[in-house]
Image (cartoon, rainbow, N blue to C red; front, side, top):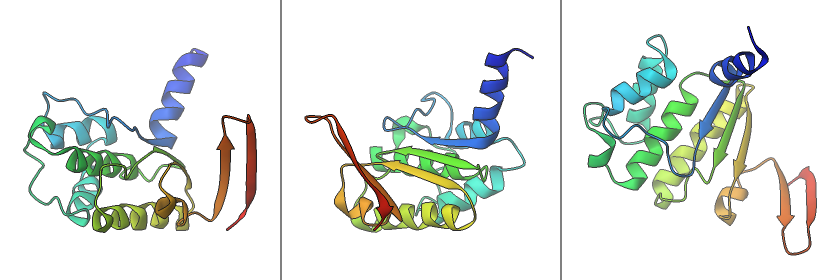
Length: 150
């Protein structure tokens, strides 16, 4: 197996991604998007996460029929359903109201509490306040600060 194939396999099996632009396949149903990403064995977990995120009836819908916030919650469910070792989340709550934001953050916290490394990139102070540890980047100065617990 080539090194690029090994890296691809590692990414698929060990890392859950939440992309800022959700990266759902628009012509497939939500269920098909989840099954493609997490496989059949993890599909029940993904569907349970949809329920937890207030989306019990979207499995048959296409992403184009969902709001951006609903698509974002589907993307988080997709990332968490595999019980990945690492979850990388880029602005996972940017399109969510406070109640849905908190539901997503509770699910991310649960993943961390069960041993996953969860890395969230955010500009939202309310999201940053959920973190155990924060690093702040100041692009104007080219500096990185933080690193301790909050």
